[in-house]
Image 1 (cartoon, rainbow, N blue to C red):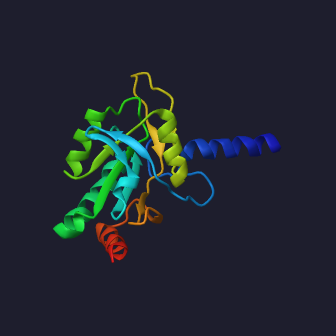
Image 2 (cartoon, rainbow, N blue to C red):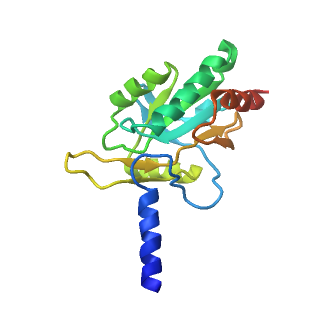
Length: 189
């Protein structure tokens, strides 16, 4: 019986991580967030230099077929709903969990598709892993398919960092843009 139980648990884990989907891939423990320096097409992005701004941080990748576009669209809609003055105090940052394929140029183009003020960032595999871990974000690269492509299962929430640089909230996939706006405005007060 123990072998059957182990097999069942392994089967359930594999099913929950199949493809880039809404399944949660998250390490245990409460995340603390933290400062980081990653690269964008326009140069380094150092979150210490963004103090005083609300940061909406999303971990994803440009070839994600579904959850990344939905989450980033909600963040972009929230930016559009803010006044110009409020928008100056907010940054939407995507951290690529696929540094092998997501070049700086590709990230810049992808980010601009959602919002002209969105920033696409990446780093080495080790740098991205350290940033993800500090936020409690998880991701797992799936095996390469026969066509050479692969999916990266990842956490689907957007992390909200307050003007003081501390992790203030996280917003799950499917959170309406209005909730993003309410969360951001509460931190701007």
